Length: 261
Image (cartoon, rainbow, N blue to C red):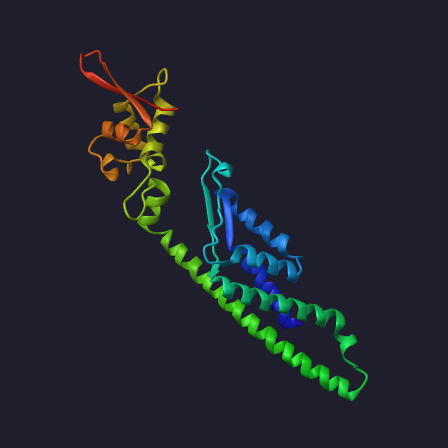
């Protein structure tokens, strides 16, 4: 029974930490809430959850952060660690662990009914049965330890990647490792929108003033980072802004822009 309690505790730890999603400042409270929520769950309930979200079939994709639930005014993160198996192996694994749950329930609720513990022969038989049960539980426990170790290794690699320039480009600049990006998610578009919020006059912002503002607030946001030579090219290619030129007091053309709705 002690071994199966260790098994339950390890499964709760895996389920509490294998996925989180939402605004960055809520992730720690979410993790604590998951730990509390899982604390009193039965082994049967834990196994059901395990095969719904952690041990999954090949090709079983689950959305972590649905667009409709992502706050537009906060930084949100989402991650999930899972183990993917072919359909046949998934079914075999699930059945084996469900049988383990049944064995656990039998040990807790029906052991005295199955064996005559008031005779020597009954005690011998129950001792053999308990040894077989322990060996079976131990095999499942070692399997679960392997799954937990794999998840910890993946988390460690993820933490290491989060320290790299590539991760910073993905998170802040919206640039994928292969160099591709979607303009609407780039850091430079975000910086231009911030500048417009701070400097706009009647909805329009002088581009030169915005350039100076961005150079002070976000010096790493430059057209060159996004394969552009000039700021007007960024405004044009991103298709996130309207651009027009007005004649200044000195007779020169002055670029103005505004975010598109």
